Image: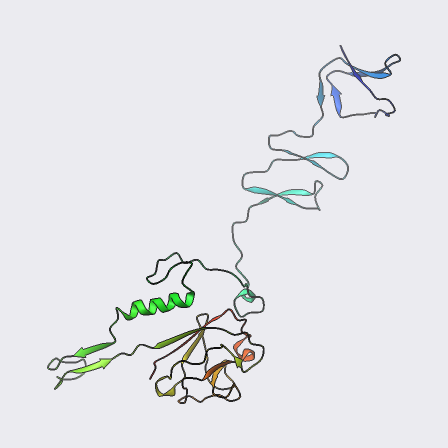
Amino acid sequence: MRAIPFDFSGVELPTRGRWRAGTGIELEDDPITKQTVITATGDITPISPLTTKGDIYCRSASGDTRLPVAINGYYLTPDSSLVTGLKWAPLPTTVTAHASSHINGAADPIAGQSLACTQAVSNYIPGASTISGHLTGIDAALGARVPTSRTVTAGQGCNGGGALSGDITINADPPTQQYAVASVTAADGNAATASALAFSPVGGRYPAVYVDGVRKRVGGLTHACYFSADGGTTAVADGSIASGNTLRWNGSIAGGELVGTEEILIEAVAQ
């Protein structure tokens, strides 16, 4: 028998509590100390709803309860439809791809992201070179290794023909590339970039235009983009493109306006 004093002055004792005795429990008021004496005939142990290693002690709408331990690979997540308001769920095994609306130029593009370059490239200094400078450096590196001409020696047969009477040189002129950062456009005919065309293409032909690596159709006022010599009012025709022309943008045809972060590449063989 053990007597444990507790001060329950002014407290209404419940009919059932958070403790239970091994074989019985008795409450008795002490008139001298004004305390209630709990007398137990066995060990007093706390009442717990937990039964298994890993169980979680939680609360239902009416009282304390347990959430049984889950199997490996599950995580805890809220679920208001369940008694405890919690449940175990399996970890996801797949990653959902970005919706098409998140791509550059779409309705909800993901902006401000960076791309790490893990491949060492000649003439590129991480943290110092710009992307434009990086690409220009690649051009320079390739230009130093790829000859721009080939010579056919007289007296030697050619594919599809006979011997030549003299040596000839076959030139393979590399294209000129002009890089620029896009301007912000708000209406058809706005300047796609603040930089005018810095070279005249051979024959005045349309250059190739790429925006963030995607080729855009060049033409007249009804195309994605066009070159103009009068501030965008009219388009320069194929065969008349020249240095100083400005590249104009038709967002309603190209699929969206430029936001000013795109990189534009203009490419053609220069005169």
